[in-house]
Amino acid sequence: MGQHGEQGDAGGPVGRRSRALKIVGLTLTGTLVLGATAVGWAYWHLNHNITSVDINSALGDDRPARAVVNPSPSASAAAAPLPTGSLNILVLGSDSRSGKANGELGGGDSSGARSDTAMVVHIDAGRTRATVVSIPRDTLVTRPSCPLASGGSTAVAHSAMFNTAYEVGGPVCAVKTVESITNVRMDHCIEIDFSGFARLVDALGGVDVTTAQDIDDDMSHLHLKAGAHHLDGKRALALARTRHGIGDGSDLGRIGLQQQLVKALSARLAATNLLTDPARLYRAADAVTAGLTTDTGLDSLPELTRLGQSLKGLTADRVKTVMMPVVTAPSDPNRVIAKEPAASELWASLR
Image (cartoon, rainbow, N blue to C red):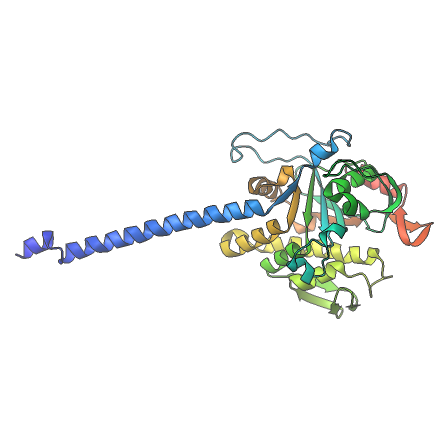
């Protein structure tokens, strides 16, 4: 009887273990299916967060030559070696995009948006060092004729403020204007909006900065005593936008704060091992991609991931921040122009 119950009695130990194993197996299978579905959804979601602009097609061949032509990736991105050539990336921070999140952070209508921040990020061959060059938005430039997505083109504008290029023609005109004043080819363009920047800082757990003087800026709603501070996304964004109450109140003082934030973000990224914290990794990726507009060469997760992997040797202490040399514009004491020959020498060093 005992032997019969051990082998065949559905209510015996073997039967109970069998049912338990089936339940565990089904639960595990269901968990794996749900997990795979969640990963698939997350990938789809992040990939579709990214907005892209086909800058190469819009601008055609009338552009500075590429410094280095890298081989095209193979059919298997995973098998292709990581690129090591030098790169020039125009990074734009738009002062607004339409939407509730940007509006709450100080943004306005997207139709009137300007590039509040413009930095040319030059990555050396080997990709272990970088130079970040800030272009003051108040710089007077000759804005070239830019193609419009709706057809036609803008007129050439002399003595125009640099940041109006984005206003009249978006990233395409911003790239063309930068290339016209630097004679440096922009290999890529990345634009991030207010909410995307703030969410990225929050996803990384904030950033640490040290201010050399008290900051009291009612326009950016930032009030800080001189000293060390740990800033969340909203206050980090306010610091990036602060210009009143520091220095002479011009854009030049703000650029110093923005460059300090670049260093702080680089250090935070280096100190945060996102791969060991999937939840934080997803929040950071979601924050970046949701507020991101790129050229079509960086408009997918695989392309962004490969770029990130190629920069793994680039540490915060190897990032140099400078500003394009400028002097007060003779025509307007509130504007600046490129200081020559220093500006041309700087751009020549990045070709």
